[in-house]
Image 1 (cartoon, rainbow, N blue to C red):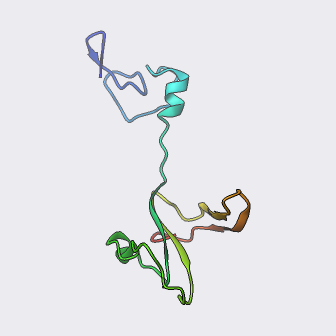
Image 2 (cartoon, rainbow, N blue to C red; image 1 turned 60 degrees about the horizontal axis):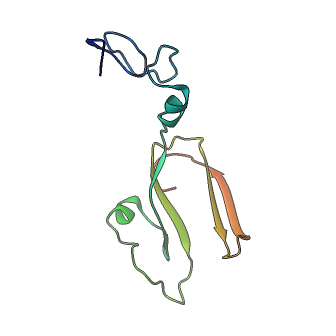
Image 3 (tube, helix red, strand yellow; image 1 turned 60 degrees about the vertical axis):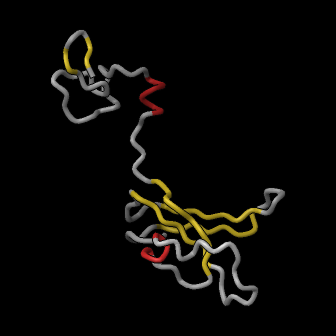
Length: 116
């Protein structure tokens, strides 16, 4: 970005630009804009339910995208594929009824990459 004819990093306010620093006090962004632009390293790519233990490659290929599951499925497994997840992050899944009651909830720590 250019400010007063000079190339400026809008996050750090530095000329010449250096690595982004959204928390810098000389940022050209307002405090509320910096908060909205803050880096969020983790994001959910897709989620689903499978009747067998899912694999990352099958999930990413759409194998679990069926609209119905067999009535006699031996299990229903909730899976999620996310990016930016680090070992030690907490993941939480909740299944709620139409009236908002929690039917099932699970919290756990991520041990590594792959499907959560």
